[in-house]
Amino acid sequence: MTNPGHKDPTDYVQLNAVLMDLVDGAKSVLGPNFFAAYLQGSFALGDADLHSDVDFLIVTNDEVNLLEQSQLQTMHEKFPDLDVDWAQHLEGSYVTKAALKRPDPARTPWLYVDNGSRMLERSDHDNTAVTRWVVREHGVILDGPDPKDVIDPITAAELRAEVAALIPEWAAELRADPEGMNNAWRQPHTVLSYCRTLQTLNAGRVTSKLEAGRWALRTLDLEWTDLIQRALDDRPDPWRRARQSSDPSTVESTWAFIDYVVAFADSQT
Image (cartoon, rainbow, N blue to C red; front, side, top):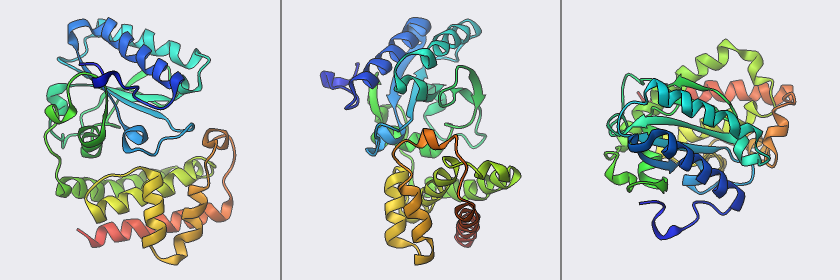
């Protein structure tokens, strides 16, 4: 079934047209190998706005073969050239229904297109329990069956375990490229992402980064209030800020916040 009830998947007419192009293009390339398409991320979790990226998941019956991959590559190359902002912020993966069914401890890379990229690559970005939980519990059906019929239930314990392992891993990656934090988009994105990991550890569920930031303001020590509020105030127009430098004092506070979250996660294991 395609988007049951013929409801528009989002409140944005131009975005709905881009999503239709994406799904129709994937179905044309994949033919009988196409199984389903879902919208995930902030649009699934209910906090999307005009500046959100567009997270999708396309599910196949079998592995994408080399010819299909080449044709999907050609399809994705066109989106950044469309005169629609939404088309420049598509991000998502292609995965078989068998691989999607349960979390994969090996984090096997899936065929993936990064935010705004023209190129398909292999990445484990979406191969997480978090992504499966979001799609299963809140995913927007673009085409195909209810995701609850595709993905097994993800427990709170599974979410907490994955996030607890991710927190220090991600911190190490950030520390390996400290100059990357000197970016007025990455810095607040990092703060809100870590707020979300803390909330998942606390609640055993996943929310959007914006909701997690608001939760953190209500919950965490007052010393983090200014940092988190500034991250929440990053919107509108975060993509313009991606070309600007971060406030050095905010960068320093962000590193301290990362250390705080890592220490908290360690105390929970």
